[in-house]
Amino acid sequence: MTTAATLMKKALLALEDGRVFEGTAFGADATHTGEICFNTSMSGYQEVLTDPSYRGQIVTMTYPMIGNYGVNPLDMESDQPHVRGFVIEELCDVPSNWRSTQSLDAYLKQWGIPGIQGVDTRALTSHLRSRGAMRAVITTTATAEEAVKQAASSPTMEGSDFVKEVTTKAPYLWDPESTESGDWDIPSPSQNREPGADGVVRHPLPEAKHHIVAYDFGVKRNILRRLRQQGFRVDVVPATTSAKDVLAKNPDGIFLSNGPGDPAALDYIHKEVKELIGKKPIFAICLGHQILGHAYGGKTFKLKFGHRGGNQPVKDLRNGKVSITSQNHGFAIDPSSLPSNVEVTHINLNDGTVEGMRHREAPVLSVQYHPEAAPGPHDAKYFFSEFARMVETGR
Image (cartoon, rainbow, N blue to C red):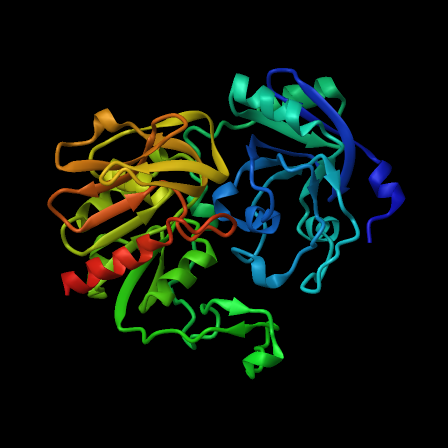
């Protein structure tokens, strides 16, 4: 339980350009630096905290109250939170949800992550949209002047390789007993089915008839669940796995996951992915999409403030259909750098940036956004079925 003393402890959020926001501390009593960004989702703060793509970042939630449904093990997208700090307007320290196992404050304390509440997140978001993403510090001990200097001297996101910090250390088979991947419902007497150990009723899964290898650059669990729901047996491998070792497994397809940091800094991955193009069907999401762009010979650039949230409009250029998508990225592919045998299939309707690509000659497709959502809308969920059809055709 959060104490009054904790809530009254002063905290500062200092940006590298000298802007300082005052608030009160929650979570861990610590000083952390990171790139400050904002997420416009109205719910899903636990999925945001545990998404490895946020490694190295301080996240601001634009929704005004956070923490009202607590934290629970089922909604974690990885084994731990990856954010450097958490910025909100108002903390609900007494969660009300039957699935909650602890408060947000207690969860951040457990993992040593500082939070600050009482911040005017509208003003902060407006500032970041105007000035762009920048380095920042959350602190309970430094003065404003000290914190600004600390922010300005911290590492930049450009050139940062956080993949090496979040990728799996050893290969593993995802959900070998098929107990974690099924869609779930709240237990109901009308279903006449007993809940599992996690307290929910799982839907049955199809036979795992296709074998794929998934590169873990910081993969979210819900991506792995969606792949298993499409009948894939998913062999997860570290980011440093060579193309030769992947092909030696003779998979029916290859998946390139989401992840954190600057895609241009991952040249050791680019060259391996390049060797896989045309050898097996490939599907890539988010950082995997950007890595694929580099493997094609293209380039990426840093967005002013990124796309993060569950309300990003994306247009499919092939049929004119618009989907509302979940996104989390700070870099994008330069379309002018792509070779002629790569087609841009999707664009962001807010700024026109590349949101999807398809190879004109090889079975390779990718999207910049998150079709698995978690959190967010499921408009783009069909991409997992499209990958399954591509793999079936490839066999």
